[in-house]
Image (tube, rainbow, N blue to C red; front, side):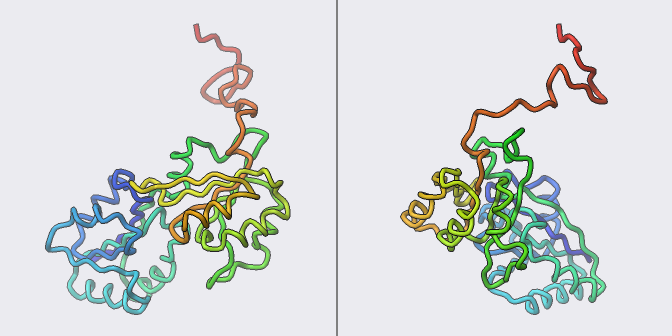
Length: 255
């Protein structure tokens, strides 16, 4: 018996990995993160699959399902949205499985960050604009460590990708405005890669009102940084004819 923690991707069923999909369909038990998982993924499962919506269950109740599957010697697919490594809440589950002596495997998924950058046709890093990306969130029921407060992170003025923070957009902007200029682009991507995906563009001054007007309170990523509003950047040295590396010598003619 084995548990497969599977990143289901950001929403579009075609963005779930081939490996993750294969593992999912090999399991008799399926545990999924409720409305964060595209129903099309679940509707393709065989009728014999035992499906549990974990958004309605606490940790102990979820662990009881793992115990039941172990007793039945049946594999479990644990579906999480996006990629498991970012706010996946799987560490405590893996710890519980270790205590139960249950084997498990982790299969990565496509993050909503990657899906958002793709739909925006943007790079998160640009030469001489930003070479750093910070993933974070604003404090909520889960407190953020003091040294990771958004106002402190904003001092870097790099690209920011903020999860689980859209419901506090005004507070987010207030903290970021301590360091980012008011014209800094702020983009909100709601349900990245889903059919009802929505993109809201603004800056430090305008984004909060735009988000509140749209009534968005959940399932949205906030992206901040100069990389989203410039065509004026230096070409990467990677493809420069003056730049050599292991696979290409500089000044090599392509004719």
